Image 1 (tube, helix red, strand yellow):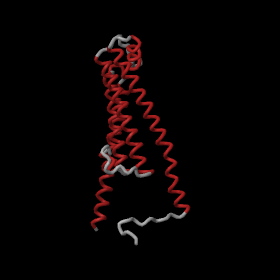
Image 2 (tube, helix red, strand yellow):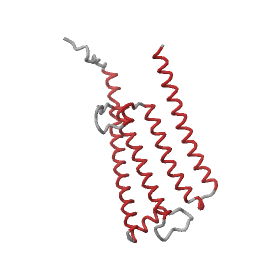
Image 3 (cartoon, one colour):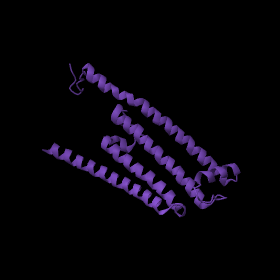
Image 4 (cartoon, one colour):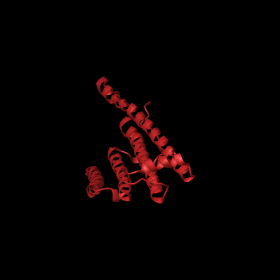
Length: 202
């Protein structure tokens, strides 16, 4: 006897089944992003090791740090000062935020476009993944890009004296464009949600 609680399994015709199966072509792309994440983790620890080494007086680590934060046409600092440490830490935060962006794309994209992960009830399930869809993913990505843009803008403002006005205005304008884009995506998503809810009530 058929259990009414069990969903009816609909067998797809060969062509729709083949087309639907093509979503697995995205799997190598997500694996590639995982490898890119590994590169970011390695880069983070190299930079952190050099920062700690420079703080402990290692000359080679200090030179690597100073070259990493050097700005073209600006005199290179000769020692580890507060500004240099701040720039290195901002660089580390930048790596972390890009890594967060990668995780959102890998996990959210796989869950949305490839296959369910069946994480319901898992203690480590991300809060945002419980209601993820294409619109939520776009909003999350836009927010993450704004955070990354903010870090780059702050790094530019710290060295504002070596940049011309056009560069500062251009970077600020790009950041504002990211903000407006995120607001437009969120507003569009809200309109879509409200329209969908209204259609369900009628």
